[in-house]
Image (cartoon, rainbow, N blue to C red; front, top):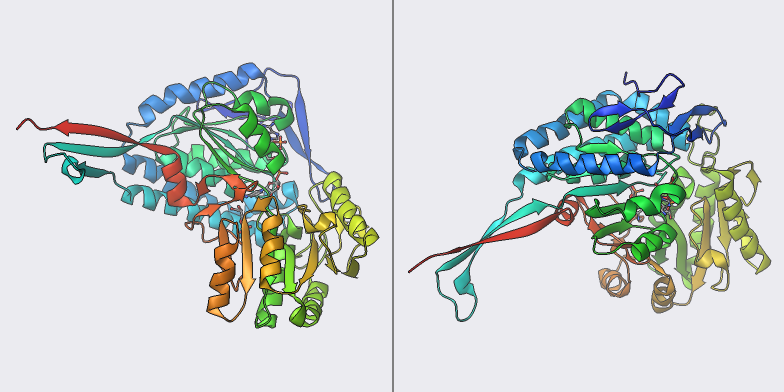
Length: 488
Ligand code: NAP
Ligand code: G3P
């Protein structure tokens, strides 16, 4: 059992310079469970001075850490992965309570994160620099060689969202520290306890003092201060497009790696295997109530097969298990949304679509924050649901005349995270994939990030830069060229 460190008032402390520190602030945030409103704990809304201390500490510690042998850094990662697995049950319980994740998804998040951390250590050990001979370039002789090594950037700011508080924190922290950077980690407020638990695991695994520091507080209050802090050398952010734009507008001369919102389309052509397609669409759209950046968020289906597909999707939607993970005996697919604001927003999109003529085939109702899985047919491009990211269990079906119309509508979105294309014709699959303005196209599969060593990126308003184990390592390091000039 891992005990998170609290002060005498029961407020969770933060990891700063290797110590779990109390805050000087009187300002605290109470974390309530989205499942039963029970109080899970209180965190500190840290002051600017405390943020300064976390960043300063990280800066000082990084100077020594960058010279620590790589095999010592990777050993710490292997230990952290083992600790995650050996504390799986406890962490899964925390995820369920804090962010309302269903049990299967919570188990998968923890296991996947352990795999991610181990694979990061493996890749880091196997990545080398290069040497480039000068005479490759016209006019030069063999008297110059550039030895290119990879250098850490310094202090990495890791900001994670509520929906994957462990995975999307570790996928920033692990590549950062293995490459000799230090980290200031600001978890999402709803998700902060899971984030602090992860920090505790890294500390127990042997991350030295100052290399991983946590900062809690509302992004709306301290976010701007942290992202524009002079001590930060790199910002790795996952969250909404709105906050991503804000960070990009207010920062200057600091590289950004941002994974933001999405409106992933599943494009269904007339020769698609409709059973496979329906199964993927439903799994992709509704798991964890659609609170995933990569959830299928619209279906663009050609008229010839639309009726058949819709029927199959509807049958599967009606089989989804709906309920509260706390009180349901079996695993549930559809859980209460993270808060009432999120549920209000989803209902607003559903209402707008109904008013403009969309047909509710299933769901459409809400009890507190639990929204029944909602399937809407005849959604058209004048409806908000065609364009906005609900982050909830609602799926619009947009009927199109052919693949070209599907491509046009898919690309009209401000987002460009992923898309799926379902067809049995490889030429058509490539035709569509080639034209989609997204980071990843899935052929005959739901949109999803994994496996986590694949490149993962969004274009347009879905992100900046590329994540994925090797890609994150590259992003968090820079080449350094030392040129040997040979006297001849
Ligand atoms: P969010 O509201 O944007 O929050 C994300 C993180 O940013 C939280 O830690 C938040 O802190 C912090 N934050 C808020 N304002 C900030 C500011 N001004 N400066 C710096 N940080 C600030 O997003 P969310 O609701 O947690 O997550 C859902 C969104 O994330 C969806 O749009 C989803 O598509 C996206 N997402 C994208 C990916 C991807 O890989 N593409 C993956 C998962 C989620 P507080 O919690 O304290 O507000
Ligand atoms: O890494 C977690 C998140 O970015 C997306 O993962 O499996 O929901 O597509 P997934």
